[in-house]
Image (cartoon, rainbow, N blue to C red):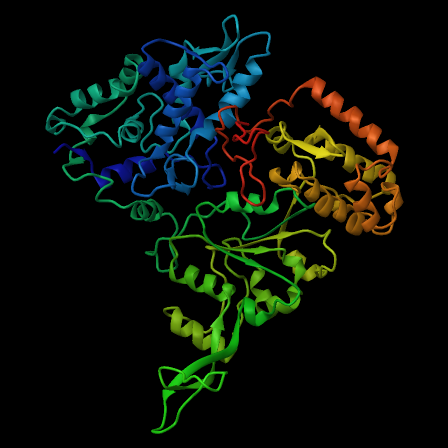
Length: 619
C-alpha cells in the first residue's frame, strides 16, 4: 500500500492555483497557457527529445493532445462518459468531453496554424514581452515547436498571476503546482521521511529534468509535513464531495456558515435568439454543463398551472362496501383489486417550482431551467405573479418577493426547510430560454417582460460553424453543392431580391446532415419553408411556380424552370469559387483537425456533423 496526498492537503494546495480577475470572478485565461507549457514538456520527456513536430495529424501532435487531456482531466473511471476538468485551475467542472479541445482552440488551431504561414516563427502566447513560453512555426515545414530559451521567466509570470498564498516574486513557492501535477501518484513510504527526494524522482518521471528541478528549487518542503496518508485520495473522496469542498468558504449566507455554488459569468435570466438553425439549443446545451438542468418546451396552450403549479385531478381508492362490484368499460369484466376510485384534487408542481425547491434546498449547486421557444406561449399569462421575481439584485437574488397563493405556499412550506412564506429566486437558480421570432403565430413580449432578461443574439453567419461544416454537401436539382456557399447564395438572394428579414433566413444547422442528401427532405422541409413561411406573400421572387404542390411536382421532375435563373447562376458561381479557394481557415476557437474542439459544434439535435462517407468530421 502506497501513500497519496491527503484530502486536506490537496484541497488547500489546489485552491491556491486559482486565478481571479479584478472583478473577483474566476477566469481561465491563463490556465491553458500554463498547462500547455507543462504538457509540452511532459511530451518531450515521454518522447525523450527536445522540441516537437506539430504537423497536422502527426504522431507528436497527437501525443501532445493526449498528454494535455490527461493533465487537465481528473480520473473519472467510476463515472463513465463524464469528465471532471480543471478548465480553470483551482476549480473543477463536469463535462461530457475531455479536455483536449482547450489545447486545440488556444494553441493548435490558433497559434500553430497561424505560424505555419507566417514569415518568421511566432511566440506563444503573444503579447507582453517576457511571458512567452513556446516558439512555433520553426523548421523547413514550419511545423516544429520548442520551449523558448527564457521559458522560466514566462512560467514565473504565469504563476505570479495566480492566487498562490504567500507568493513572493523574489522567492516564489510553486508547491501547489507540483501537487496538481502529481495528484494521482502513489508514493513509496519514504515520502514521509525523505519528501523532497521522493517528490523530485516522481516529478522527473513526468517532466524533463530542467523543468522538474526548476519547480523543486522553488518549493518549500518544510510545509509538507502531514500531507500524505495511505488512504487513496479519490477512492475515499467522491467527486461530488470534492466539488462541494472546493466551493466551501467562498460565498456564505447571512449566517456566515453555509457553502454556496460558484457564481458564474452567465446572466441569471437569459434569452438566446436568432434565425432558425443558428444553434440556439445547442449553445445552451453546451453551456449548461456544470448545472443541474431541467428543460421545458413552451407552446400556445401552455399555462401557469403547468409551468408554476396548480390543482389537478388525482385518483384515490377506497375499499368497497360488502357486495358492491366494479366493472370496466366493457361492463362485463370486473376490476381487480376491488377498490372504488375517488377523484380528489391535489397541487401538482410545475418545472418552475421544482427547480426553485431544489435550488433553495441545495445552495452548493447551480440549478438551471431551460425554456425552449419561450415566445410560443403567452409569457405574461404563463409566468403570472412569478414574473415579479425576475428582477434580480447584484447578487442574483430576486429584488422583490411574492406572496404565493395558499396552496402553493403550503407546498413550499412542506418542501423547503424554514420557508418564510415569501417567494424569492435564489442566486443559484438560472432561467435561460431560446426564441425564434420567425415562427408563425408567436406571442409578442411586452417591454416590461423583456427588460428583465439579458438577450443574446446568434448571428446568421458564424465562421466557426462554417469551418465545422466546410466538407458537407447538399444534393440539389441533381447536383452536389457545398452547403456553406449554397446557404449563402440562397440567403443573399432572399435578402436582395425578396427583402426577407434576417430572422427568416437559414442558419447553418437548419438542415441535418442526413437531410442534405435526401431530395424528399429538401422538398418537404426546405422548399416548403421557403414557399409557405419565408415567401408566403412574395413567392415569385424565387419560384417560377405559384403553389407548393406545383413546386413539389416540378422538383420531382428535375426542377427545370422551377427557380429564377439569377439564383441558379449565383449559386453555381459561389460554389465554384468556394471549391477553388479550398476550405475556410479555422477561426479562433474553432475545432482542430484532431477533433479536439473546446466547444465542438453539434447540430441542434446534438448530432456530430459527419463527412460524406459517414465518418465523423475531424473538423
